[in-house]
Length: 219
Image 1 (cartoon, helix red, strand yellow):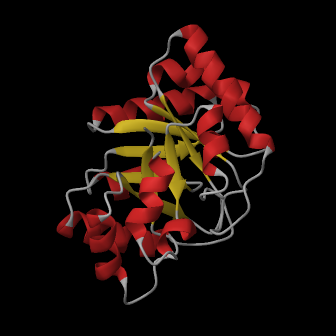
Image 2 (cartoon, rainbow, N blue to C red):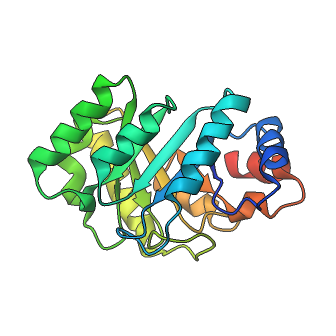
């Protein structure tokens, strides 16, 4: 059974408390925190996500799955590490060198947090291979990062499949997370390709019954 990380990006203003409570009752596995700086991607959710993640931390014991879509990775890590997230994922494309990537991996680990690396749709999966033994999760963006409610890019299914085959061949213990356009229609193919953590936002938040959707996504 896969795990579900519910993106809070589309939660309506004024409905946060009720929505987070309902998500916990519906047994989402993680709260997915989409942190955008208005530079790495056009949308800016930085302060909003910091405030919402802080609020979730106060009212829930469910783990935070923090996805940093930012240029200044180090500052963002520091801002969100104080919330003791389960995992912090940064983008390969945010870094200028392999040395920087290894430094960030080490820094997050030293702060007792799991590490994830994410790649955009245009980035070749091979570019992340050498870092896989040192991280806990690889996040494959199945849409162009920056906004919710997009349609899944079916080409990314092959990328997930290729990653799954590689980690099996090399016997690397790592989670594969897929993010973007995940719903009841697309989830079966994403899971078949090899992802074991699905990020879903609109598909869950816009539903009348969160549990029905989450249960179906997990099957």
